[in-house]
Length: 352
Ligand code: NAD
Image (cartoon, rainbow, N blue to C red; front, side, top):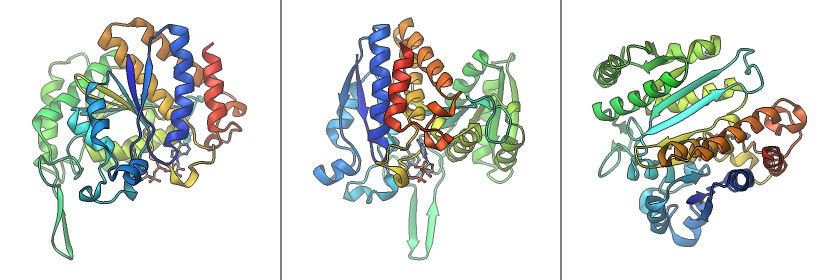
C-alpha cells in the first residue's frame, strides 16, 4: 500500500521526517506493507513549477489509499490565478474529505487549565465561510467596491447531516454525548439549517445525548470545564477555532492529531499551521502529525479490514503517552529537552 506523503511548508518537512521515522518502525514491527510516495507541494513547487499544488500531485492523491499532509503556509501564497492553491482546501473538496476529525486529549494527566481534556471535534470542512473551497466556480468572497468586502457562507443540509452522523457514530464508541455548536441566535437561517439536520440525525441515536451550545459560550466553557464535552459537532470556522483552543488547553497545539476523511479517502494532517517562527530550528513538536498518521492507520484498518493497522496505531499512541510523562522526552513547546528529530527517534524506538 503506497501512502502519498506531502511534507508542505515551514516545519512541515521536519515533522514529516520525524513522523516517517515512527511509521517506518511501526511498518516493520506490525508488517503493514506500507510504502511512501514522496511529493513536493507548497512554496517549493510554486518556485519550481509555478503552482503550490501541481496536477501530478492531485492525480497521485486521487489514486492513493491514504495521504499524509504536512502543514502549509498558505498565508504566504499568491492568488490562485498566480499559482497559490491551498492544498488542504483543494484536497478536501476534490476528494470529498468533508469530515475534519480533531481529538484533544491531555496526555500529561491534566491540561493547561489544570483540568483533564478528552474530547473530539467534528468539523465540516468543505463549506462555511471558507472562500477557497465553498464555491463550484469563483470564490466565496469578493469586493464590489475598493472599500467593501463581502464573504458568502455556504451551509448545506447534506454536509450538516453527514458530519453529524460521523460525530454520533464516534460518540457510540466513546461517552455517548454530542454537543452541537452553532450561532443560530444570529445566523437564524444557516445555523438554523445546521441545527435542523443535527436534531434529525440525533433521533436515530436515542442512546446518545444531544446538547446544544452557542459558540461564544462554548469557547468559555471549554476553558472552564472541558470534561463536560465528549464529541463536538460544528461547522467549518467554529470547528477550526475551537479545535485549536481545545488542543492548546490540552497541553499544546503541537499535540493535536487530525484527519480529514470522506467515505472513500482519508488524509492525515497536523492540526496546527506551518509555524514559520520556529521552522528549521529542530524545535517543532511532531506529535500532532504522528498522531494524525496513527488516526490514518485506524481509518485504513477499518476500511481494509486489517487489524494490524489498529495495533500499530495503538502502539504509536501509547509510545507518545509514555514519552510525554517526562520533560526529558518532551519537545521545547512542553518545556522539554528533545528536538524534533530526537523525539521522532525516541517514539520509533519505544514502539520496539
Ligand atoms: P501556526 O499553527 O503555524 O502557529 C501558531 C503558534 O503555535 C506559533 O507560535 C507556532 O510556533 C506554534 N506551533 C504550531 N505548531 C507547533 C508545533 N508543532 N510545535 C511547536 N509549536 C507549534 O499558526 P500561524 O502562525 O497563524 O500560521 C502559519 C501558517 O500556517 C499560515 O500560513 C497559516 O495560514 C497556515 N496554517 C496552515 C494550516 C494547515 O496546513 N493545516 C493550519 C493552520 C494554519
